[in-house]
Length: 290
Image 1 (tube, rainbow, N blue to C red):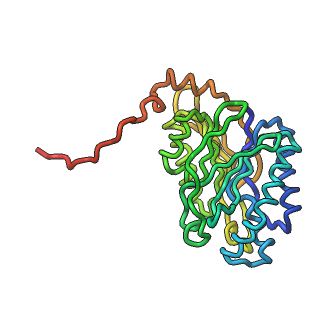
Image 2 (image 1 turned 180 degrees about the vertical axis):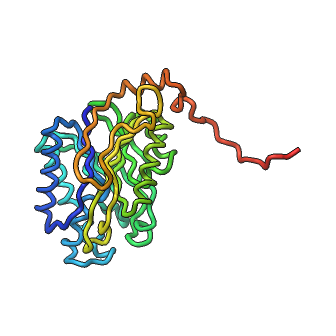
Image 3 (image 1 turned 45 degrees about the vertical axis):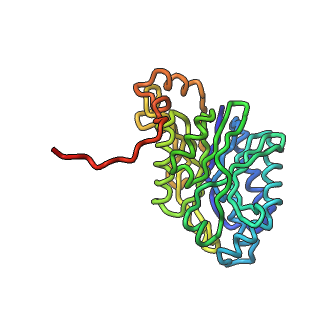
């Protein structure tokens, strides 16, 4: 499978048509390079929020404007997947779920069919300023290359969420992310690398980069498109499969083969995937010094 992981350049976007054209550009670039699947960052479409909210919005106004246009934005995402006959993970968008707002990541097939992964763990910004709620538990997605998982940004920092997807058969975890500081980016990057190491799987990280002052959520963004794998024989000594430079916009292409994971799980120097503790860990008691 040829994966295209996009560091999305955040910039002022005047309307939905401009966003759709930008999305179409990156989908065309990915397809031209032979990609099977394009993976994009969390909240990439939220660069629209400032324009939709009429300029200089507060957090609540920006969020409300995005939610009101969620169906139209999703339609543009589906059209890009169909036009380019490409599997598309277009990042995430805030959507209404009854009375709640949740952060949802679509995975769209080339014929326009789609399924969602909700974000489970909320950052302080989402919880305290946006009022975004926790969504449904982790899922896995059937594709021509086997089962995939999606762990949205902060979710990748929690081992149990990704482990549930790997135990259900996922060999590749897509991590759409949006981080406004280098601290935030490195937290997600370290989490993604750790998930790849402990599960002996592939983990791909797609960040937002750049930004502009009129956007509440996307005024500043840092990251590097990256793919991680096992830290063992047949892979890089640090587990890094490939990465673009920090804060560089654009596509990162990687050719991923699930059979390489089968080999390292069977005959690696260690067997992290197999040796994951199955039984509950007893509460540690104080050690007794003698």
